[in-house]
Length: 209
Image 1: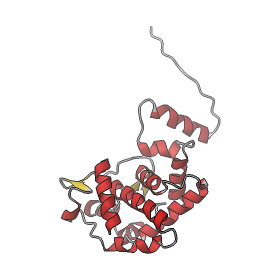
Image 2 (image 1 turned 120 degrees about the vertical axis):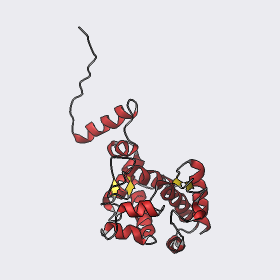
Image 3 (image 1 turned 30 degrees about the vertical axis):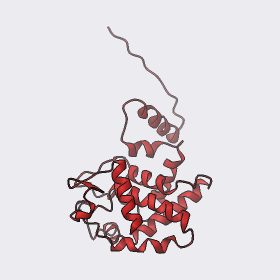
């Protein structure tokens, strides 16, 4: 006794179906940001984020591709949405370069960053759990990744040939969640906060170091 509207779409392949999923759901019941990025083949920044994750040994096994939040027991260290936001900040001002060149630059930057965070390597080698790192430290959280991306953008602009050396002091910072230095910057009341103000304050701390 009732009628509903039905729309049929012709199946033209997986890529087209994924794009339709991203388009429809971003304007209706919004999916997680990560799955929207994963399925969006029109946005170049999404493509770059996917390329960085797929081609980098750093990210390949430790990035949650579909959810934008990590459960306590998750074996993943990062989310695709966090990588997207951080890489977008990093590549600000490089839009004239080709997509492949931007992806290669981003991958090179994040792999160099990983050398300053030994815990990331231990998680990839399964010598340390992702949960332990996320619980005890802040350097794998979105607010810090975005701060690293912003600081990295400035480094690439000011020191195009020597930016790698400038990253070394990051390994000497105390990234412990218990470090009171981060309260009011990356943390609010002991909880990680990724508001715009917190990203800016964390960026300033990274740049100073």
